Image (cartoon, rainbow, N blue to C red):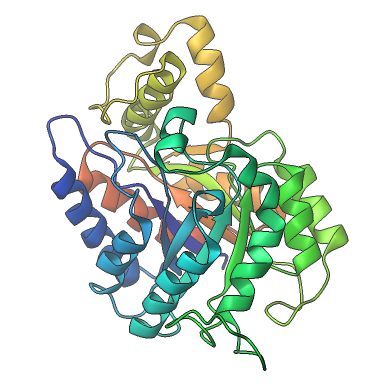
Length: 331
C-alpha cells in the first residue's frame, strides 16, 4: 500500500471565517491520524485573504498539539523568505516539543507577489542562494561542530528531516545532489512531473538522511459515493482555479451543477492544465486512477489535496481515499 498524506492550506469557505478554517485544519489532522494517513503538511502563502497558513510553524504547532502519531510539517517553507537560522530555531523548537513527528519541506518560490515580498523585507535575488541556504539550515539542525560559534537553540542536534519541494527540474536536481527526499507539486503544476522524477532518480546520491530516492507526488483527489457526486463536489476547486486565472483569490465556493457556465473557454483551458493531475469519482474510478498514477510515476507516497466546500464531505473524501488506496494495485 502506498503511503498517503494530506496537504492542508486552511482555506476559508464562502460564508466562513479564518478561525473556523484553522479549527477545521486541526480536526482534519485528527481525522487523518485516525484513518492511517502518514503525514499532514501545511504550506506557506502570503497575502492570500482566504489561505490561513502563512505563519506556517504556528499552524504546525496547532496541528501537532492536537494529534499523537501523525507526522506534521511544512509543505513547504519558502526558504528565500527567511534566514535559515530562524527556520532552524522554529523547527528545532517544534521537533523538541513533538519529537520524531516534524518534517521540513523547502521551496524556492516566494509563495507570494512581488509587493508582498518587499513587505517581507526580502530581496528577490535571495532565491539564487537556495542551495546554499538549504545546506546552512541543515548544518544548524545537525550536531554542533568543534569551534562552531553560532548554535540554533533549540535546533542543533534535532536533525529535522529536510525535503526539497518543486515543480521543475531544478528541485529534482538539487534533491538528488543532496540526497534528500523530493516532493513534486503535481496538484497545481503537473507538466514536468515525469521528467523531474526521472532526473531525481537517475542522479540521486545517498546521504546520511536518505540512502535511496524517495519521491512524493502531490495530486488532487475527490472521492464520493458516485462519479457524478464527486464531479459535482470538484467544481469548488475548479472555480477556485478559475478565480486564480482571473486574479481573484476569493474563498472556496459551494459546488455548482454546471461548471461550463462559470468559466470561459480560455479559463477552462488554463484551469484544466493546472488541474491535470486530478482523480475524481466514486470508489472504482478512484481505485483505477490511483493505480494508473502509481504505475506511471512509481511514487513512494501521494500527498492528497481534496479541496471541497463542505467540511464533512471533505473528511468523507479522505476516508474513502484511505480505504480505496489499499486496494489500488499497480497493474
